[in-house]
Image 1: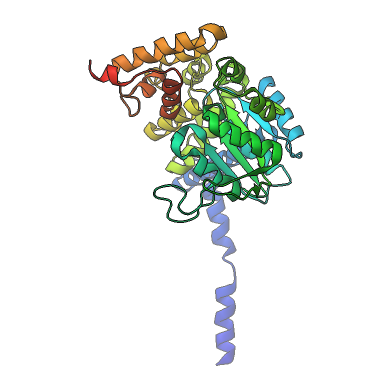
Image 2: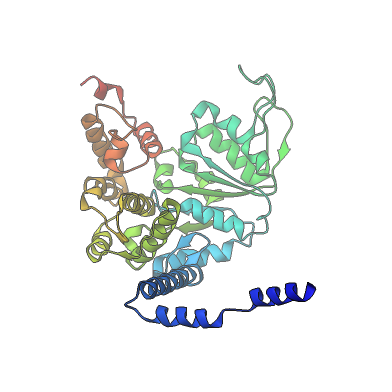
Length: 381
């Protein structure tokens, strides 16, 4: 009985070499159904290898953290980043809206000795002026109406790590004084507090404003500017990075296609020419949005971009920004007022002035405030 069981077991374990050989022969025949399936699998495997090679190429040759690029302007900025990151110096990152200033700040933190500690980002333009002091430095219980308990500010939350102050040029004068104290004395007080608190925090600031012009207009303290400007890094606009357009499109297409469960194998020739000839007033953020829209609407393995998605009107603010500093405010005010007139004073939303001009609503709100534009008079028209 045991002998029979052993024989059956051996028969089941014996590989059917003859049938495998026949299957291989059929698979090699491209005219058979099995052969076509076999070759499709091989093609899919080759495509996966090409995609993997592309990802490795972007990661190893043209990607610094999440910053993709090989052009001379971006290499220059990344060289500066690599030099200052290991130090504890204060950094001021300048550049137009959408260029990726926060990515640079995160890369500096990640390559610093503080990388294991918190990275706290604050958009200074997005916080109402009355709340900025509390947000940055915290408050004591009873410091003001509604302060029912002690609250830690962003500087305390970033203790031992890095705080990133985006749009630092929008800080009101009284907060500029408090920030200057942090940079000079490394201490601050909570709102309603009387005891100084030590601040072991690296400060990285960013702005799309001309702070030297702001000093002349008395909207930025010169002593604060010089404290922030210890190590400046200028992030180049996308229109100066022609060599990076294809890499960025491939990177975003791969990322969004993976998220959407799609496969994008190629970029249409006309699409690539269109993207490379466009001025990109919204910089990398605008390119990212365009590629994401293209992936969502894609019904094939080829990426296609409709020219109508690229707003020619949105270049107006960039043209104004390139003008001499003495006419910058006047030109920007005229452009913004014209947009508000068309949108009946609406700033945000798909039909607002921000979308019309191709800039974030928070940025437009800060510009409206800085230029003393009354939005209400456009709502009445």
